[in-house]
Amino acid sequence: MTKTLVSHVGIAVRDLESAIKSYAVLSGLQNPAIENIKSEKVKVALFSSGGGRIELLAATSEDSPIARFINNRGEGLHHICIYVDDIESKLSELKKAGIKVIDETYRLGAEGKKIAFVHPQNLNGVLIELEER
Ligand code: CO
Image (cartoon, rainbow, N blue to C red):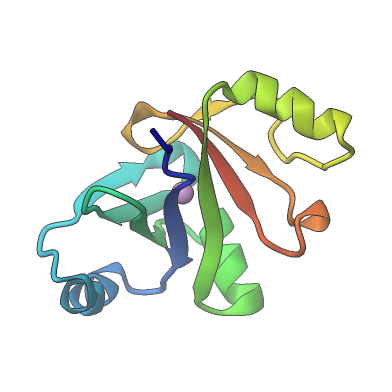
């Protein structure tokens, strides 16, 4: 059986409520899972329909990474999240291959999943999030 590669795409938004309305129309999904991730200073709305999902990210504080992102680059695509079987071994595999990681080890993200970020520098300008299945 083939495994889904993309867990979700993360989109940085200024106004979560207004973005939820638009993406509800777009996706036909009415009630995204809302989660306040205090450690990241971010509030998330996750639209899910089986496969790849859409994650809307809004800052809950001016020093949130999402606030900095929007101030520098505006709203838009923030990251793509890729599933991995074993996040620790993927992180060391990436480092061995000379691909710069942001997180040396995993942390706990939305839904208590093990996640880690990989630097855009060696991935053609795209911030990648890893999520253990
Ligand atoms: Co994400």
